[in-house]
Length: 247
Ligand SMILES: [Fe+2]
Ligand SMILES: [Fe+2]
Image (tube, rainbow, N blue to C red; front, side, top):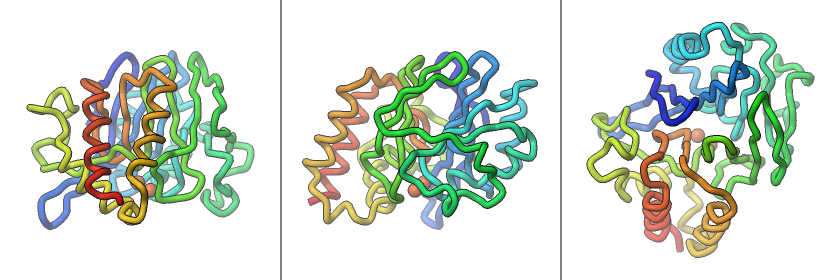
């Protein structure tokens, strides 16, 4: 399902449901970017049919210019082959911390890969995207991207949340009181098993630095819907969840 977030930024992707009725989203974010579309992550292969149909509807005649990968786990890269089959000229932007000859599929050609270093800011079509090391990650070399035009921070696994099926398509400002702390806690404690051994104060301080350095209008997690209504409130709720999980 295609959902418009802000400006030329859209969200697609599906969700998986567990036996207790909790859902986990696997999203792709798409910026139309004046005819040079940018994709942030590539979605899960288990949702391939719907994702490719949504992408084709959203992009029309435009081919994706660049796909930014937060990291290389399957839920984030599972549709690379289908996307390349449809649009062979698409480039990938990966962090300089990953090992593409090991972590990228063998059929991705070296000339299709561009590197981004933490702290760098580059132009892609009419847009500036800056890069930072991910504060919360389950794979080395994970990066976050920031879209300077819309103020959207693409956080990969971080800021995800589990939710009941009724919330599957709702942004925070379409829910009664936004995303509850409990939804963030459920996700973060299962996605980042190391957190009980981590200083919560340190993680929260690092997150605060990321937020202080840029005007974040939207947080775009892969495993949740975009948070666009009240970013500070939801950063505070993630901090609260971290306080419950961490040391
Ligand atoms: Fe991950
Ligand atoms: Fe993930």
